[in-house]
Length: 444
Image (cartoon, rainbow, N blue to C red; front, side, top):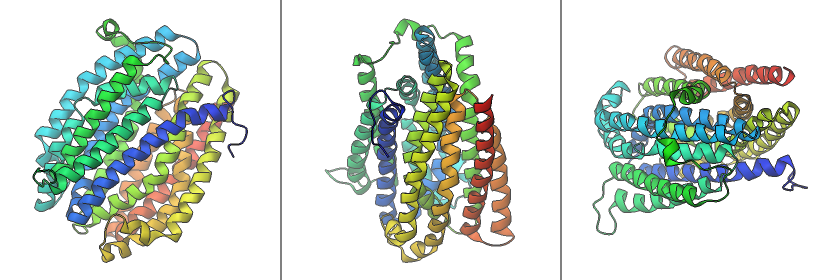
């Protein structure tokens, strides 16, 4: 499929941007899975604790990502239209506001972990573990605005290699400090789940330091932000970042909010159900991170082509990305169906848990195909600067998943199988709606 790729064609451009993002996503995924594997083999309840923490944590990450996502699209459009000064100003203003807003979110996670977990409906024991994890994890948010601002610039102009290297550094650091702090090696005390949160915060900080150094010293960017420009944060420019980015963030926040409600319901089954739900979701993410990299590259290239007035080229990029993503899903689905027990055993040795999770993994083997359409085509739609549409369909999807999951859980008593059947139905419906809207944009 990759035959004939050269620097002058779209395939090269797509994978030049996508490959570092895919590697970044995968190493972040490995980082999280190492956490879950180490903690899961130590205490199965730790899986549920992490599962309950990740969803409110992801809401905060989604909001911060929204602001940088708006800057990414606008930088891509400006870069494609040869307006480098506009791209520079979008980047500078994004630096200021993203850095500022990270502070209150850090304080929420650091000061209110027990309150957040109580609202999630966790048992007292899981609340204790989750509170320890969230408090130590909160420091990873403190400087996240700076990291996301640099990422938005690099993605907007299609220079993503430094993002990949940052993720590799963070993952290696995280695995090392997990080993040291969870189990208590090299003279450190065994901190368990708290050690995992500390390790993640240290790792993210190290990755961010590298990214800052790489950004300051690189000569590959078409423009450079200045401290003087960052300290002149024009609100009218930030409003444009928000107008484009906020629907993207609200979309992700709605999804995360829906996940919180689902986990809240799943906690009513038993103490282990949330851990199984998160475990299956993380395994699904193996494929998601591959085509998410392709999708983000699609958004950047579509944005650049639309900025340059090349609508037909933008359409060609989108369909090419979708074909590659479907090919990845065929491989992943086959692996899920043939080796489910072996995959699950990587994360837990509990035979009862593995037996209950196998049917869920079979459902995921089908679900990844409509998810691919939503991710790739959705990012192509965002490349047109139409971020509101995806917010609308995600809002519908969130309400649909919450409502049908409640019915299948508590009326038909299908337990977790009912939740994953609901997710499959939601992805199929939204994939149809999103593809139809994309076709409308192409013909406009």
